[in-house]
Image (cartoon, rainbow, N blue to C red; front, side, top):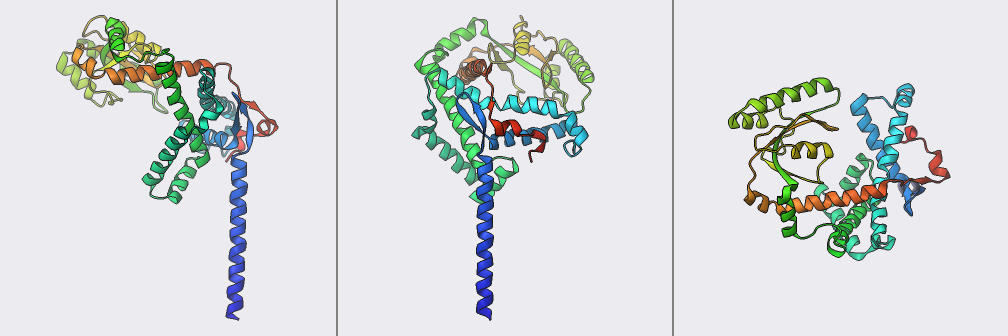
Length: 336
């Protein structure tokens, strides 16, 4: 009798394993289902789900928890969610379109060096999380699959190759450090400090602007010690750059660049600069040729990447995801 019980238990365990495998297989099939194409590449459901769920969470953080649970509020934010998701979905394909424009091919995504680099990054991530099971759980908590992560990392490697092609092969982007330093010294960088007032969720934007205006006035009237104290105080809500840093032309946003390059003299304070995230006030400080030289390599890298992003953005314009019948049928609000 005991043997029969054991046999039944083993049989039930096998059935459960088969069911689990079938479920995993079905889930994987759904994740990698093609929803359309963009720039000649298949677009998969797993990417749409990742972007949609990520922005659903972000919307909840901004507009209130549970907005997707109530059909009325969900409909209220539908249009904004759809516009955001389908725009973000273009990001990877804009990079790939730019790669194609400069002679890179679809087959380059399977280049052994690129595959090896992605494998190393995946292995490093697994090591950070301890083992493959914990890594998989972490990916799932972020709505990510390993297949999608590999795709995203591959696109990043392709963008690295694009930078190399544009700078080293074609010379479209400056690649000579000495020539870059000469260009910087021709009035193409400004040495500044800043204070920043952040527009956090739920903030009164007008009140934040007023706080920035107050800080600007205090900086205008302050001596060096008072300026240092203001910059390092809690009133400055971005303390990443406590030390002076260079704003380089064509690297920062137009608003910040205009403000920086309007500062003709050391000690000049900019008008309040409004950005997506909040308000900046810039203060020009005394330049140091030795600091410029020591930072030239990192400044060149930032400049090169800004130029790459500019080129990628130009290929994003007019780019669309051509949805297939299945893609057209998907309701973003229904994605879980």
